[in-house]
Length: 415
Image (tube, rainbow, N blue to C red):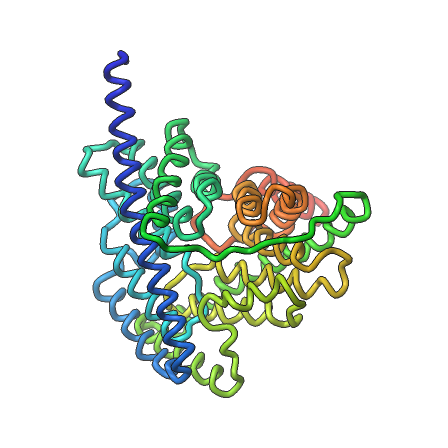
């Protein structure tokens, strides 16, 4: 390829990154503003949770009659990356956006990462037709969509770029995809800033010295984070299977689930576990959380998403990790904010099998001073979380995969 063609090809991909970054970033900016509005309205009108069944029925009907081809969500992106079949319908973006806003407005326990990533992936894949791209280039587009969505919704461009690569890591990735993932992440990140939409900031004011005593404490703490990630993933899959088995008509699943959630919120006053739970996450960095907070968030989020409501899993994973770390501060002689921060990213690492991206995210959010604690915690939690993650279509191999395969073989031989 001569120099002129190389320059033209590079300019084409920079243009594609700019378009995906701007469109995905704008969609994420709108999502962030909409969810802030939904949380405010819900807080001011506590009776809104009674509309969960109606909201759930609407979401169920919308996807059953008009969105069967996009109902798989993030798993559809992973499946299309591994085995490309057809362009992801653009309607995935508005459908998941509407479903997520309804879920949060009426009090469902869900996140926002899944929504942003699905919007980014659907937007990005449309450029397959516009630029007449082949199957290999289409894989690159899906990575760009994931990267743009993640980077823009959390305000972490480096982590977003690496997450998009790491979540599909054991499928084939080109050098071009790796470079462009970073380019689009920054386009998307700065687009959100352009719209003057801000992200939540967390801080770890005190970072102790990394000595042998502190290192020893990190190990059991991180194993607990990994086990929490395992519980979260298995709980989410459990409720999805239960609703699918018991209720054959899909639109009724979120309707029935909404009734059960509304009754629980009314009789037990569990409003703390509605929506994203950002106030509780922020509080976890400053004072010890109750020991059961993380368990209830796991239960409510798995039930909400398993019933068919829309949103993501990552912010609830942040909630689970931060509150678990905060609760452990009563027993673990490490600063409470550090434990909350470690849990914040380590549980996410275990549930998504992305320890590198989560380490980078921790550094972006909490500063380079915490890097040692964050990295060790993320990798131990990743190893301790088992082979099942929140994305059932994700290809899981690498160090953890080989360890579990060897363990299973040894058990069979012993038997």
